[in-house]
Image (tube, rainbow, N blue to C red; front, top):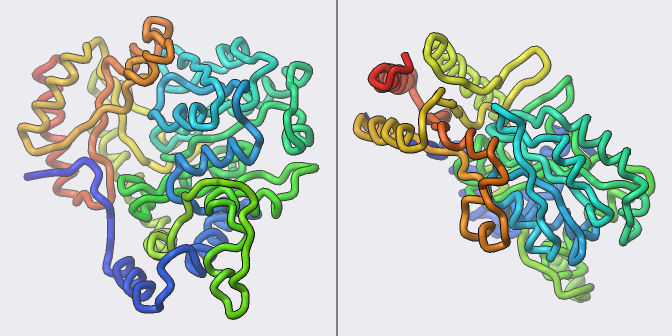
Length: 403
């Protein structure tokens, strides 16, 4: 049996919707993208949403919308994928990395507090594996405490009057925390619809935001549109209407819009998303039951106070080194099961070593990485395949003294 790690779940309904888009003659940003934005906003309980080419583009454009740039600092976690940090570099700001809590994948809020300076403009938290970061309340407390240090550099920063909180929710579309949807907790929330994500548009992403006094949401939406389409004053749909050809370029901006082909896939995926989330929850439950007596730690995807999107099933193998965990991954591969690792902490990667980060300064992140394995978790898995994964995993863990 060959089990892929995370293939896209595409049905005939998505194919038909894409075919409809190809037939109707409008394949770039158009009516389906705008409809997808409205449906995402409704789903997330926000007033507006913007769909772009990736979650990375969403995060970078959000920093730009909020005026973050050279001379500013942005704090994020050392335990994440590069996109959470590379966007800080893209806008010319300085990334400030902090460690995670002991025995956790979550950014340490006390280290965030210590890292804040008069140059800090934003904090990027990560909703890893589909679980909403558990300390947003602490981050907002820190932002309030540090108001006296905050030096605004544009009108939106002045209106907010504090550091803004950005959620890298690439994994967490559809997650909930204390009755709030992912998207109505942080100031801005960015989602990924990459091919491996729960809801896919092949590539793509979306950003939603909370209403803030003194910040006009319609103007925020318009700025995302300008930033994502060369600074063009009219989008492609508006510009091609009869007699409406004329446009202006407000500034030499960027190109990262979503297309209607991508939105077509997303609209169908969103229409069946609850069944996708339910199936992921079933698989997580089966894995949890199978590992109850194993010497491993699993993530709390579903609790009384929160519901994960069930994006990744990460397990921490007690007392094992990275080399031993890699051997287990290889043993799984020998049985046809593709496993993965999430993630190498950023200070272990050349890009961030070259900036000056050293993994020795992030011992908790390294300890989490050293003994982590991620199992396949996706809605293309059959019950038989889940049983096959469980049987082989338990056999291999027993060989390593973990069962």
